Image 1 (cartoon, rainbow, N blue to C red):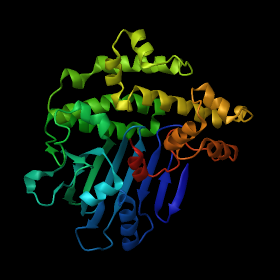
Image 2: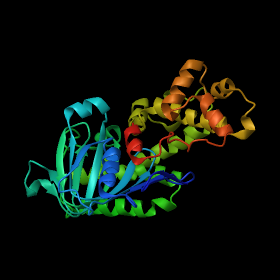
Image 3: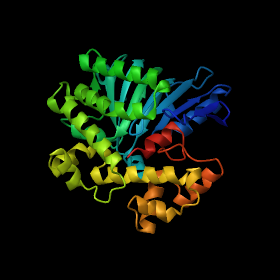
Length: 352
């Protein structure tokens, strides 16, 4: 699907595969293009051009939404990026962005050349900490994720902001190649493919940042076990007896171990609730279930309190269950799991 939202700005959303969003300035004069760029990236940063405005200004941004992380590609004219303490307080973002510089440079405006990432290097941006950076004309790949996904894998999670790691480091080179492969392959991937690749990608990113592959980073056993547990949960999602204790017992592990395995998903209870909400959503938009009451669908998945169900559903999908059903009846149902907004900037804001 392709929607023309503004002159020169095109947004794409893949309903069956990995959602994709594209923003560019085709057909816009320089000043209009700059305004569009600043309006869009202004969701995250205060930005301004570093050189005089002229017809050479350009940008192209493309993103793929992998469910729990967003992979973006930026190509843009030299500019400055700022996140002040006031902005951080206003937007409350607690994300980490890993940027691979493909061409050009990006670094602290108050630093020297040694503080800037050049071609092939990795620079880390902690969106919960102040930043004041500048770029040359540059091209980059960027992986943005909630802190909760990456921080548990890092040796010093709060000391990464504006850290530059050389692209000559073998693990950074491996991460760079991996992200490029994800970006190139995303158009052909299913959502199941996208979900499966998030864990290994985070492990590789942590290994590159920790500068060593440890048992915790490798995590092949942990990933395999988590996958088995998730399949078990999927098969028993309507079971009222699906608790941390029963699941841990089924796999011969402690509840503490289970909670640790599901930290990347916001906790075991949160994972169960989100899965049940997704099942409710699927049934609400199913034409064959239009005669079934919303209360009965909610009850089947363990939501016995109407107001609590509506609050949880709206928090996940930005609409109430009744509104979701109405949209489906009109042929305007939303792409599963990603809410109503389909721009890369709002995808990043909604990562939790």
